Length: 453
Ligand code: PFF
Image (tube, rainbow, N blue to C red; front, side, top):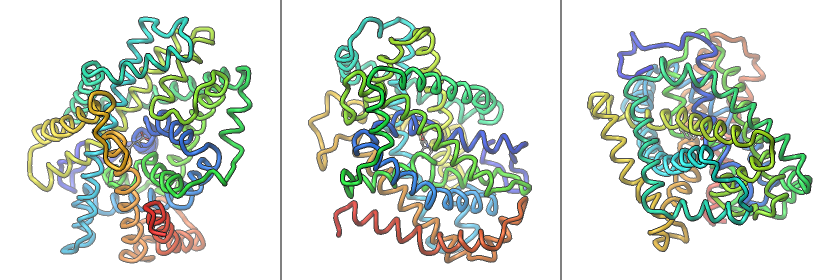
C-alpha cells in the first residue's frame, strides 16, 4: 500500500475487511488505551466522557466520512488531494497543517510507545511482583526520568515504524494487525472483569459514568474535541490517504461508522479496565501520562495468570501503537515523496530522523529538561496540546468547510452513491452538519478553550 504510484495503478484495498482493518488500525492505538483514560482522569471523569462522545458522533463521524470521500475521489495524498479537487487554490495549505501535526504527534507518540516496550521487558522480568501501588508509581517516574533508557526504546520503536513504512504496509503489519487487534480487545475485556470485581471498584465506575457537569472547564471541552480528532486519526489527512486506497464499491458511510464505533468502544473498555482499579488501589485519577502504566501493573498482580497477561498486553499495546504510527509517518513521507520529489526510502529515513531529533527532546522533557516549560507545559505536553487541541481541530474545520461549501451536495451524493444507497434525509443531515454545525462547534470550542469568551 505505497503511495508513490500514479493514480491509474494505485493499490486498492482488496477487501472490505482490509479497509476497516487499516483505518481501525490507525485509529486504535495509544490514544484509546493510554491517552483517553489519562485525560478523562485529568478532566474529571464522566462529564468529559459524555462531551467526548458527543463530539465523536456530531463532528468526528461526518469528518471521517469527508476524509474518505476526499481521498477516494482524488486518489491522492493529502496535498495532491486538495490540489486535484481544488486546483490553484489555497486549500492545499490544509496539507501543511497536516504534516506539522504529524511531526509533532509522532515526536511524543514514539516516547509513549517506547514506554510500552520497556513495560514488555519489565513484565518478562516479573518486575511488578510484590510491589505496592506507591512503589509501582515511583518505578514509572524513575524510568521516564532516566535520560537514556526511554530514548533507547523510543528510537527502537521509531526504527520499527520506519522499516514498515519502507517495506510497505499491506503484506506486513496489516495481516498481523487483523489477528492481533481482536486479541488485544479480548485481553482488555479480561482486565475489565478483574478490575470491576476489585473491592471499591464501584467508585471508579461512578467516576467514569456518572457525570458531574460542574467539573467541566473550557480547557476540558477543548481537550474532548481535540481527543475526538486524535483518537479517530482525523484532521491531518491520514484518512484521506487511506481513503485513496478504498475501492469504488465500498460503502464509505458504513465503513466510517464501523471504525468510529470500534474506536470508541475500545476507549470505553480501556476506561473500565483503569478507573475501578485506580480507585481500588488509591491512585490519583488525575496523575497524568503515567496513569495506565501505574494502574495496570497493580491489576496484573491481582489476577491469575497476570504475569503472562501483562507480557501479552504490552506487546499488543506496542503493536497497536505501530499500526497508528505508520499511518502518522505516512503523512510526512507522502508529502516528502510527492511534493518535494524525494524517493520513498530516503524520504522515510529523512522524516524519521527529523522527528527523532524532536522526539528525543520530548523524552528528556520528562526528566532532565522538565524545568523548561512554555505556558506551564513541558515539551512533551506542549506538542501533544498544540497538535491535538489546535492543529487537528483546525484541519477538521477546513475539511468540513471544504466538503460542505466548496464541494457541495451534488458531488457528495455522487461519491456516496458508489457502493451504497443513502437516503435523502441522511445526505441532507450530513451536508447541514458539515456546512454549519461542525464548523461552528469547532470554532466556538476552540475560541472558548483559548480563553476568547
Ligand atoms: N488515532 C491514534 C491513536 O488513537 O492512538 C493516533 C493518531 C494516528 C492520531 C493518526 C492522528 C493520526 F493521524
